[in-house]
Length: 372
Image (cartoon, rainbow, N blue to C red; front, side, top):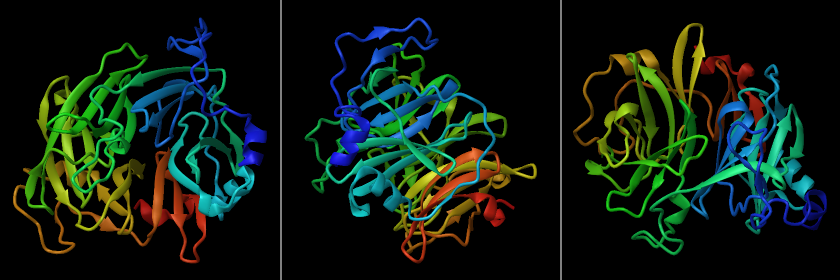
């Protein structure tokens, strides 16, 4: 990592918040200038005006950073083969010491941001302009932060001995002036959804969640949402969420208020033995779709018309191996997609492990079959 430290500067990504930080008059989001103490970068999501939300599970915090990358730009075709090797070369290490933990597309500039973790745990944030990489400086930047209330303790473990703090943030989003955070809390019903006004005010609306998990044949309150998006369904705003093994669940956004316990409506069981990785809503030729990448399945596509026409919810077990039920979905001829994000209404950025072992990043204009 010596090359990396030379390029970026010691402590450029991880440093104690400087005592001389101050509020900047230019920022409409009441941010301060300084160096955020980011211990990990496990989730990314964009808010308004090039503001990037960085989920840091180690500290159970979310940082809002002004990337100053708010210039309008056309979508750029991307095709980078062996991206892990290219990043490793840039950082002076090898591909087996590089993990891409998340990816987010700036909806204004269309630049792609990558959350990287090196083998020694060092977090790195990179920006792609087309096929070109550059570091995102995290020293002396405009930022703010929110610490999540009631997060699992740093040493807390589940019944299998796995650390719980890493699931304090499972996914991030932004909608209607609020940062949206799914994950676990230290409460009895630990599956949690937070809605946090931005600019940050110190207020956190915290709701606990309950779902019927058809593949497990029971109601659950302790499994976190793995990935989510928001969308209008029959004229009402919903959180659309997926969990391990792979239920698809709707939660009315207007019910996810502080102190509430909300039961979601399970509209699909998409097969056990699988973990959803990313979920985005797309449009093509006047039709809207959900597109989901998976750990052990091909990419799934769901037509929003099928969601809107589905009545009721799944309340009976669907326990046969890989059995499905509920809303129809299509398995697309694309596997090993590790990350997805939306670049435009009909174009996605895709991180995929190809059959030859190469980890490639590319845009979906070459895969028209995904949306039709």
